[in-house]
Every structure is written in structure tokens, then in C-alpha cells.
Amino acid sequence: MEPSTLIPPERVLPDSSASSKRALLTELANSLSTMDPDQVLEVVMKREHLGSTGIGHGVAIPHGRIPDLNHPVIGLVRHPAGIEFESIDSKPVHIVIILLVPDNEDRTHLELLAKLARALQQEAFRNAIMHAATPEAISELFMETNLQ
Amino acid sequence: MNILILGAGEVGFHIAQRLATEGNDVVVVDNDAERLQRVADTMDVRTILGHASHPSILKLAGAENTELLIAATTSDETNMLACQVAHSLFKVTTKMARVREPDYVNSTGLFGRDELPIDLIISPEREAAKSILKRFQISSAVDAQDFADGQVQLLGLRVPPKGILAGLALNELDDVMGNIRTYIVAHEHNQRWRVPSADTVLLAGDSVYIALAREQVDTFLEHVGYETSEHKNRHVMIVGGGNVGFIVAQELERMGVSVKLIERNPRRAEWLAQQLDESIVIHGDALDRDLLEEESIDGMNDFLALTNDDETNILGSLIAQKYNVPHVVTLINRAIYSDLVRQIGLDVTVSPRFTTASSILRHVRKGRILGMSSLGDGTLEVLEAVALETSNILHTPLNDLKLPPNTVIGAIVRDDEVIIPNGTTQIKPNDHVMLVTQGTSLRTVEKLFEVHLEFF
Image (cartoon, rainbow over all chains, first blue to last red; front, side):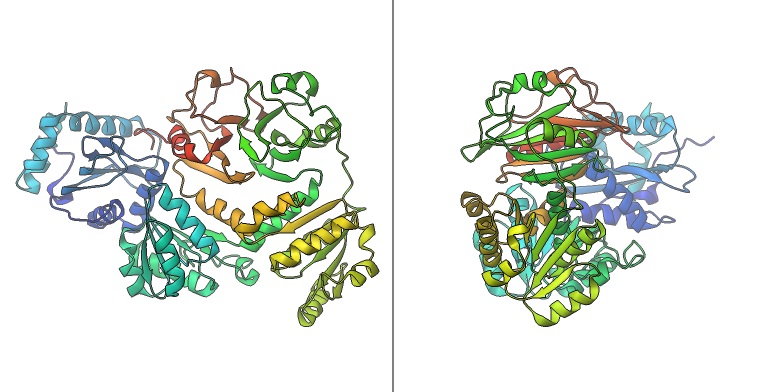
């Protein structure tokens, strides 16, 4: 079996220049084909309102539940200049990963979130994302085998 | 947070100032250059001159980056349309609009995600009317507020010279209250409001805010030396039949109270007479003492001064006091009067601007904040928040919880049970927490209720 990635290349926006958190999330929501961008934005912004998902070190993982989704959807935006995200360390965010999950109680969501958060805690991994030349290269970094 | 405020009138100005002070990125739009200049001179915000609902103006004001839109111009139509434009063209997620006209507000099905996309309709008149009715229902209180759907009451009282409260230290409170569970969350002495500590002593003439369960309000008031009176037998005089006066009269009628309503404008008076069934509508001047005497002001239990002119309300209230009307409520619009009137003996005032700003500001707070308002002179804030799973406030005895200075938890509602907490009480997921803090600590309090990353 071919090794699979958590984030396919078409779900990677390598070079965003959005001018705010809200504009970046709108851009991200619009890029997720097959999904209703308004709904995605609404869900994610609502979650942000309860507490920012900016986890420090320039990383944010906005997430939420979407009814009628069959499997988790993950996308990534890279913002070279950095953007204010109300993060816990108040630093600008460069890597935003959106995680949308089906609307049912399931531990796998939390495991997926933990897996992403763990990987992004490593400086080398973050640097690799920031220096990757193409969406394909970023996608490759998220191969399941790399994330154990 | 990026916030866009439309309209720089009393409400818009006040909210912009608050939000800018707290470090938000605020843009204010108004079509009056002078008003806008006053904003620019007073606070650190960006200002845009133009018509608030025009797409080009909203674009210029950065609507694409906006997380929260507050449409508070004086025109209902502009506010509603601005929300629609912000939604359709700029995907602004949270939108609030000030809408005065009851015809709009009462039309069910008009507002919603696929209709007029407005998340919160703010009607200053309705808010004020609600607040006035609350004051009517608990007339021995200077202020009264509902939390957790009314299960918890927060009463603002003057400590009466006679009765058990005067001279009492707070650590003795439980001893004298018997079965009544109360928590004193705010205390004013010599016009300074504070969150009290255990050794605070209450003196006659001080003001306090007391949290307690709804069922215990009457028992409590009697216990501390206030009379409680049946609503039905009360005689109420209202001056001013504008939106506020009309809503209040309507509600009082529904409660079976006998109302006399004085309105200066003959056509409005006629309209009111047609709309109201039981109330007596009188066309005349609120400050005409002959008229007031003729309508037996000296026999009234309540006098509600609700015209849209502050001076008339203040003078009318003073006249009513001269005739020994026991309960007088004064509607005050302008901030500058709020502090003054207390000093001339008008205790019970309602300020639409104040209540409106509070109900907007609570939506700006992080976490699930259900209610928020100012206490006393505005240095203290009371809020009701849901303690969500993963938030920092859970599972720790309150004594060990690191609350910011001058912050107390006055009541907790778990399912349908009201808990007046002590130091050993712990907060559980989904509890409703009523908390009082000073304005400067709000951001820290907010952090207590924020959820962690793993919250879905």
C-alpha cells in the first residue's frame, strides 16, 4: 500500500499574504473544495471565540466539527510574514493547520489533533515546513510514517 | 480582535472607547465629520468618513478583516442593511445591530442566517424597559439583575439605618442570615466601589450588591428590614410615552397594575390611548404641578420618569420625591448626569446607553460569557459565564483558585441548583458562574474561562 499523507498537496496554500486572522481563515475556508466555506468559517471562528488555537512557536490549529462530514479534512496555510493570532505566546503565526472533523463523539479527533500538535512542537519540523519549496514537499512532511 | 463600529453616537462612542482601551483594533465609521473628529481625538482607533452601509465604505474600513461588526447608527435601516452587506460581500462572522423600531424587532422570522443575518439585535429602549420593570418588581432594591434565567438575583441595596445589616462585618453574615444563603459581592462606602473582604463592615447608607437564589429574595428583604409589597395594589405614574414608556406601561398593564401615563405630544397621547387598554393616558406637561396634583401624585406608590429628556426626568423625579412618592425611577441618557443624580438623592436610575453597551460588550469577551453588566459607578463588572470542559477554572477549590485581585464568585448554578459558594466549593464542567471583578481584571478573568486546544 502506498504510504498516505494527512495533508494532500491540493490542501496546501504555501504563500498566503492575508492581512488578518479573519482574512487568513476566510482564504483557508475558500480553498477547501467540496466544503461550504461560509459554514467552515463560522464553525472555526466560533471555536476561536472560546479560546485561540494559537499554540505558540508560530503555529495555530483551528478546528471544529462539521455535520455530515464523512472523514476528517485537514488543510495548511503558510504565511511567511506572520500574522497576529492571539496566540498563547503572543507571537505572530506562520503555520496554520485547519482540522475539520465529523460531528460525532470520537477519540480519533483528539488523537489526530495531538499528533499534529506534537509534530509541530519540534523546531526542525516547523523549519522544514517553512523551507519546503512546493506544496508537494509540505504534503510529504505529513506522511503518516513521519508523524509517529 | 478586529472590530468595526458603525455610528459614533453615544453608544458607538462608548463601546469604541472601551474596546480600544482593551487593545482591540477598532475602526469607526460615521457620516458626520465632527463626530468622527471627536472620536479620533479621544481614542486610538481608525476612523472612516462615509455612509455606513455602502460596500465601498465597508471595504475601506477593512470589513474583510473584521471579526465583529457593531452597527449602531441612528438609522435602523442603515444598521440592518450594513449587516447584510457585511455578510454577503465580506463574510463578517458576527454582526450586531441596534434596531429601535418595535415593528422590526417583533417580526419573528425576519432575522437569521438565511434571512437578515444579524446575530444580536440591540434595542436600547427594550433593554431600558426591562431594567425599569425589574426595578419595579423589587422596589426596595436600588438595582436588580437576573442571572442564569433569573435563578440567581443580584440585588443592589442601600444599607438601611435600622435592621441587621448596619454595623455588620461580612464574616458574621452567615450567622445572622440563618437559612438564607447570600454573598455580598460589591460594597460602596463614600462613593468608592470595592469587592469586599471578610472583615469589611457595612455601615448605614453604604450600598451593597448581594447575590442570592430567586426563591429567597422576599424572605431576605423582610429579614433585613425592607417591606415587600404586592404589585397589584400599586398605583404607578409614568411621565413620557415614548418607546420606553409605552413598553413599560404595556407590561405593567399585563401585571394588573393601575397606570397613569402623562405624554406631552397630543398625537402621541392619542395613539397611546388607543393602544393601551387599562391605563389612563393624560395629555400634559410632566412638570406641571397643578396637573400632577390633580392626578393625585401624592397617592402614588411609584413614579417613573421616562421621557427622552434627561432634565425633565430629573426635575420630575425631584417633584415626585417632594410629594413623598416612595419609589422613583429616573431614566438618564447622558453619562454626565448619572453621577450627579445620586448626589441629589435620586437613587434609582436606568441608563439605556449603559445597559446597551454592556450587552454588546459581553459578546466581545472570549469564552462563553452569557451576561455582563456594570455595577455601581462602573468600576466593577458582573458577568455570567459557562465553565466549559478544559477551561482553567475547573476542579479546584475556590480558595486555591488564582483569581485576579478584587474578584469574587458570588453564585454557581449547576443544572437547576443555585449554589452560593464558599472556599471549598469546586466548579464543574458546564456550571454557570456569576462573578464580580474590577474592569481592569476582565482580561485575566476571561483567561479562566478560555478553553484549551483539545476543546472541539
